[in-house]
Amino acid sequence: MNRFERLFGFRGEAKVKYLDGEFQVVSPGDYVLCAVTGEPIPLAELKYWSVELQEPYATAEASLRRHLETHRPGGGQ
Picture 1: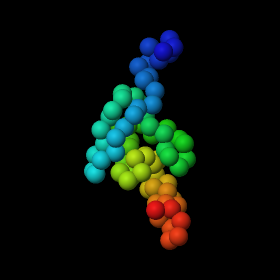
Picture 2: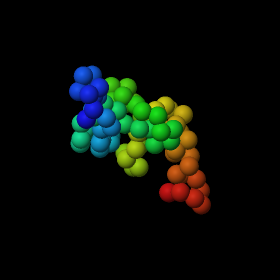
Picture 3: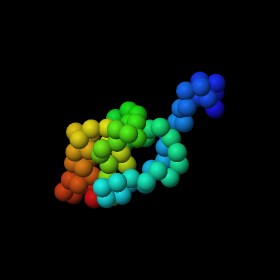
């Protein structure tokens, strides 16, 4: 932990278990990273995730993009 983290309370990336309609923080942190865009998502703003893939998304568009990638006929799941 650097001095800025101590001063401002930054805890870094959280480890999260994604459930139906909710998520459970397994390891404390301030944010998770979008599985599609890589952008940080503050836990208070996390709205989109996949229970099946256990990954978060920054936007509905990112969620749809991943769904289409993984559920194509003949490719993905």
